[in-house]
Image 1 (cartoon, rainbow, N blue to C red):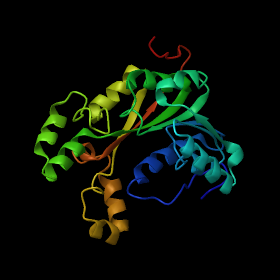
Image 2 (image 1 turned 135 degrees about the vertical axis):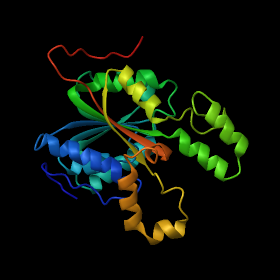
Image 3 (image 1 turned 90 degrees about the vertical axis):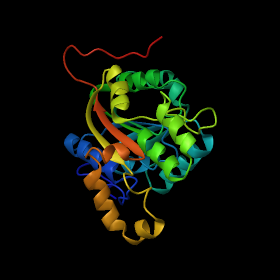
Amino acid sequence: MEQTRGRFTGPPLTPRTAVIWSVLRAELDRRGDEELTVLDVGGGTGGFAVPLAHAGHRVTVVDASPDALAALTRRAADAGVGDRVHAVQGDGDALAGLVEPASVDLVLCHAVLEVVDDPAPVVASLATALRPGGAASVLVAGRAAAVLGRAMNGHLTAAATLAADPCGSTGSRDTLRRRYDADTAAALLRAAGLAVEEIHGVRVLADLLPAAVADGQPAALLELERALAAQPPYRDLAAQLHLFARRPAGPSDRSVRPPA
């Protein structure tokens, strides 16, 4: 893994991370040798934070789990980037009080918006944290994949409930509060003043294939995932949707504040 700023190589790619890292790599390459300030909301044990710190950037990870943050601290220290990774206990719902406005170049918010009480103020806080021209990497659970998965496993009532529910949930026993399609996820980011630049599907096929196929042909699966990620309708059937957005820059830029 590259440990100095410049062209970013990142960790080995897998079907679960290849598309995300490809988008992030392009953004880091675009920024050249600049040291970025990165905010990873819900970053857990540092699967993204530590490689970004390896590349010479400074990363703050906000996560509600003290155990995850302890593991993150150990992982960063073992990787020799402990001075570049800062752990903060908190959750997405309280982000506005944890991060200074216009202080961040890149925000990661992966698998967070489907579990918070209200995603709109969280996204507004992400937008507020970004400097003008800064970018946001947002990963959310896909509704269509969840509907198909339940139907394929014989849970037709649950599939119908999830498809009809405005939030894409099966109810109080669902592990997620909501799921998204590309349009609803993009609308959420745009409402906070972010310009959506790219939308990709993550795990388009990986969760549908028998383990023998996925494990037996990892390179072929990786290439197929990357080939289908940006192509509707395949993109929209992915287990997760990755949106890459930017806070517009310009002389008239104004901070986007979370609603009261």
